[in-house]
Amino acid sequence: MAALHVVCPHCNGVNRVPEDRLAAGPRCGKCKRPLFDGHPVNLTAASFERHVARSDLPVLVDFWAPWCGPCKMMAPVFQQAAAELEPRLRLAKVNTEEEPRLAARYGIRSIPTLVLFRGGREVARQAGAMDLASLVAWARQHA
Image (cartoon, rainbow, N blue to C red; front, side, top):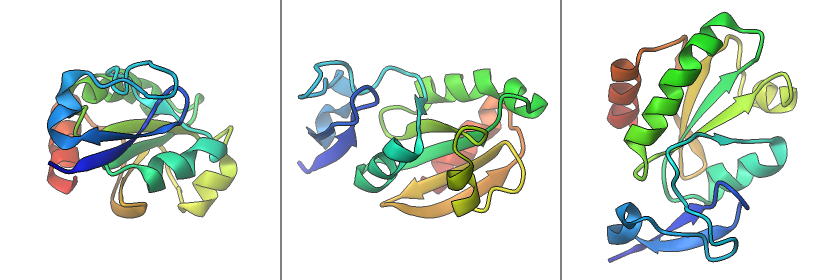
């Protein structure tokens, strides 16, 4: 069985995890914390590249801002989606107020915007808030 590279949401260490062990609660070899905890990872410019480019898992990024009403409405839905979609998909959040260069780099024109990356490349994009069923279905369709 192939081993997948999985980036730790706590220390950003890259781990090799056998694909058939993803759902068995793997822990980071560096910090010993769980690789999957059912919560989106908050990414910064410093950690974004590592999570998106070094992970063999698809990464779904929510570009959002604290002042955005639809973003606030979707935050608990995105949290629930993380619990439902892990460990086959990593969910992450980028605060566009704190990381304007990342938002500009990916041409984020409205928020919330979801961008799905696979192998470091953007494969799908969806602007606007979504309910849980729609979000999970969209992510699974494009992952």
